[in-house]
Length: 284
Picture 1: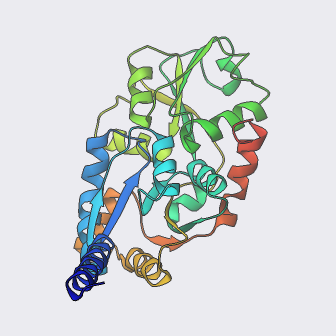
Picture 2 (picture 1 turned 30 degrees about the vertical axis):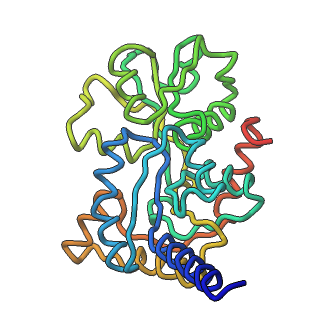
């Protein structure tokens, strides 16, 4: 090989190495689309800016079209970190054969709940849903489908046979809109979105009301791939754990995330979700 050719190879190798190093300086983030994409981006913007400062790297948020895309994006290496619900974490853990790591969750996610809502005055319990129409959120939603279905089954109500019709709105806010607009008799969604919509006066509680609240269960978390360097995993976790609601700039971030603070989490926290998914026939 000539000196010229050797220099070319060395130059190309250095160039590719530099490009690779540069690529690693971007943290590619997404979230399950349980709300409108514009709302997800609004909520993430201050958090993304905070993480950029703490990690000294660029943070890019990319919305996905559906829950499955968020799971596949992380498992296939197109995303580095994703905000999952408990069920989507379980799906990602199964699909990757245990090669994803749940880093942190909100304190609120240790005792999360779902609510059933209606405008129909004759519906006051889960039993009253028999013969009625009901909207879940996404099929892969923990709080908008899996856990509401689980508690219906526990109440001896099979949504597939005992209800007149079930549908999937795709997102929690869309479920509220479907109920408020009279498209369905009732709907199930996560309590956090319900409370937020009430706070923002985007729903009239005199018309749309909660008639059943589920028992508590573990839900959302921020998950990364296990092949992410341990040092970066720690930096990310430490950044979340450092958020302090007594600091005005941190409180803005925490309020948008509907969190009082973040705490560490582990796969075992979601064993109940996994069992519920298998029992409901949603996880093979």
